[in-house]
Amino acid sequence: MAVHHLTYRILAGMIAGIVAGMLLKLAMPMLPALKPYLVDGLLFVVGQVFVASLKMLVVPLILVSLICGVNALRDVSALGRIGLRALGWYLLTTAMAITIGLALASWLQPGVGVAIGGHSFDVSTAPSLTQVLINLFPSNPFAALSDGNTLQVIVFALLFGVAMVMSGEAGQRLAAWFEDANSVVLKLVMLLMHLAPYGVFALMARLFFEQEFSLILQLAGYFAVVLVALVAHLLVSYGLLLRAHGLSPLLFLYKMREVVLFAFTTASSNATIPVTLDATVRKLGVDRSIASFTVPLGATVNMDGTAIMQGVATVFIAQMYQIDLSMTQFLMIIATATLASIGTAGVPGVGLVMLTLVLQQVGLPVEAIGLIIGVDRLLDMSRTAVNVCGDAMVSMIIGRAEGRLDTTVFADRNAGTND
Ligand code: ASP
Image 1 (cartoon, protein in one colour):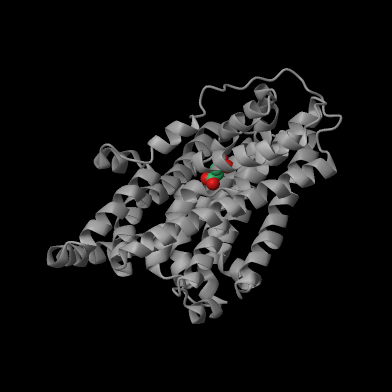
Image 2: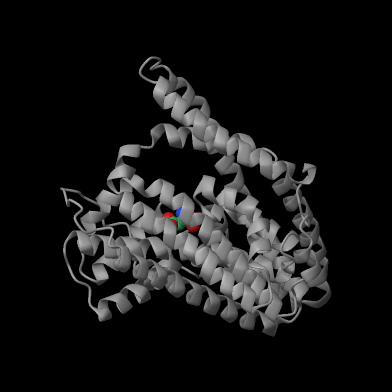
């Protein structure tokens, strides 16, 4: 029991936060001062400090660990292969995810009979796909680092690492420095993880205080279909893929529990990168040279849970407006949502913004997003948990294919526990 101490403390923080948030909501009419001082004061500050300190680690961690990863790999030509494999798997799993979402929504018909109502949604925020591609390359790496632009940091770190490997002695002197920096950043990750129970408590308490539960009841069908599709993808798609590679899906899920809690409470794949990377290396047994590349890349481009929501939401909105979608439109949704998920940053709520691309592509009214936005935070949390599991799973598959997966680490239930 003792070795799992931290996981249980985080879980306890989450459950206590949910209960506290609901109790505060009930107590509000009698004690209105609770909102400004406790909910928007203390809880808000603690929650934001927690998320900010996770995000604080993302850029240094990606930069340092990816440079060390490329250096450890040594074989520069392997990088292209790993990158292509990772992208291939990410695209494939996302397409599988959206297909499950579309199939379940078409079968269970959550949108039939739902009142349309006058909603509005600002469409101006979704970037174009060409811009997404151009934006991969930083014109100024320091700007990329200071803006926390994950993809640009990945591209810069990869190129820097490759050049370092090719620079002989000078490169190796620098590599030793980066190795030391890597150990220090990892220590910082460990230290901050021990503060997680308090941060998670504050985030959950405020969220459940603010959440309008009547909205969830109104959209219960949509809400339930997204959740069912998320669980189906997690258990069936990931289960089959892991099994096909000789890996136990149950053990995988067991080892991902802490990462899932972080992703669920922060609703951000990006903020969860330090925890996902740590678990992928120390618990799942993927070599750091692979994981330091595939995990940040996945957190930025691989959004299976988001694609599921986009598939279900599109069918839901079509059903609500009594529009029949043709087979071509279904295929278009799969293609657009898969590409849109690449452009979705791993931060809260962006999946909904990118849904505009999909709706516009098939000619559905974008303002319908205004209806589902009210229940999106809880779904965002759930889909982010699936997003990060997808990143870790693909990392395992690639580690396996490259001969860089330590199966003894994976088989050890207690490997990498943080206490
Ligand atoms: N919050 C999601 C993530 O960070 C993205 C989204 O679906 O909005 O993975």
